[in-house]
Image (cartoon, rainbow, N blue to C red):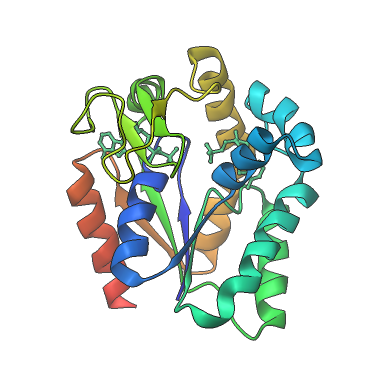
Length: 215
Ligand code: ADP
Ligand code: AMP
């Protein structure tokens, strides 16, 4: 099962991916998490990626694609993959399609989580993320049991550098310009399911589960 989660920043991709990966035993590949981990390690990839991430712009294609394909090598013993935050451009979508074809497989479903823009700003500026396992929380909408501590692994929660109003505005613009065409691409292929992301986390999860169970 190869699933893509699409949606603007703050739509709830990471939140849903965590729940879906557990339910369907999928490998969760989040390009944002891979890049942040490279930034924290100060690796050459991280240094290059950082300048784009800090500005809210997309990291150039080849760096991201390379990171995704290293992860995909793990594919052989798992039932499937959930792509979160990838592909974000038509170029990445084409690259992914070719690479999967070479492996004799393809995307089963792309899920687009739709959320109005005003709500996205509130979600992103109130987001807190675990330093250890990258789980996502919110100051009001999805609080951890203990303040600033991850429910899942006990890690410390922090605010991402790019979750400021200025960078969020840029990221939403980048989504409209560069990633919205990817949503249309999967729609034209007949692979897209649109879910209402402007509702409770559990209800978004039920909509996506229903779409995956129908396949
Ligand atoms: P993305 O991975 O799409 O950028 P996240 O999953 O990190 O988005 O969610 C962004 C923020 O919104 C987080 O603070 C998260 O806790 C919160 N959130 C996620 N889903 C919902 C929801 N359905 N309702 C309210 N807040 C949500
Ligand atoms: P995210 O964690 O998905 O919100 O991504 C955070 C940042 O990482 C983005 O604003 C981009 O700078 C970068 N990024 C993540 N995924 C990609 C991708 N597929 N292509 C290019 N840049 C990406």
